[in-house]
Image (tube, rainbow, N blue to C red):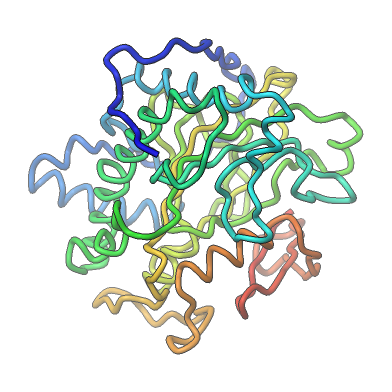
Length: 373
């Protein structure tokens, strides 16, 4: 498949109108705001490296501004993101459904009711996933004219957002600047991908059964997750004090968090951050929640062993020895195939996540993976 360059006059598509912002006074997490424009000077870059290091170690989440996309470009990407859902019928969606269990890849649709949440309740989330190489799979008819834009969106995120953040994280560990970018090649074999994700409202009965949790607390399995901020309040992070706090919407900002692969590669210096999705506050119920993501992962052949850093303490709770460390390909396939499909074992979560939290576990490729309720 040959993909043309993006046109100066992109194809017309319906405009997605997001929900109004939440009216409630919510307990928002106090996150750092990283201005990538400061990368332009050596002094600015040095200051940012400290900010990013501290934000990732203390909260595991931060915002990014001046990332290279204008508000109009971001708005257009939300219009594009809605097309695989509003512009494709159920029969065609089935044709392009992903085979997560068989392939360990999310490419294609993850349709509703696929993930088990709790007490027999399954999810009301659809997502459509495109590898940064958009030619790897065929796509629904309505999506095909948009592939040049989606490809450029992936490239923008990989080279102009992911790579600068990885350089700052490496400097924060006193490692050579390209330590992490060298194993996140844009043209390498790997599964970094753009995800469009749409949450649909659930019944009151389902909300009661799950305690209003739409996706249990978890860590992402890649290295860095890039989320384009949107107004529906639903994302929460587990703060260092053991409390769930909401993520505030900042127009045209990115929300960045670390995943397990970065934890493994950094020897626990940066941790995969626990987060969940819950029912929005009353003022936003009844609206859909459209998400635009870029999930970054190391190249498939990278073995997830820690880089030795002069500032990194001994990784006392490391998940595996160097000899047993999986490659990124093995890690992502195991996590993708298992998520929402395995029976989880309940354990005492008080010591891990604070009183009143439940913790469930599964073992994937010999590694204990935790989920938080």
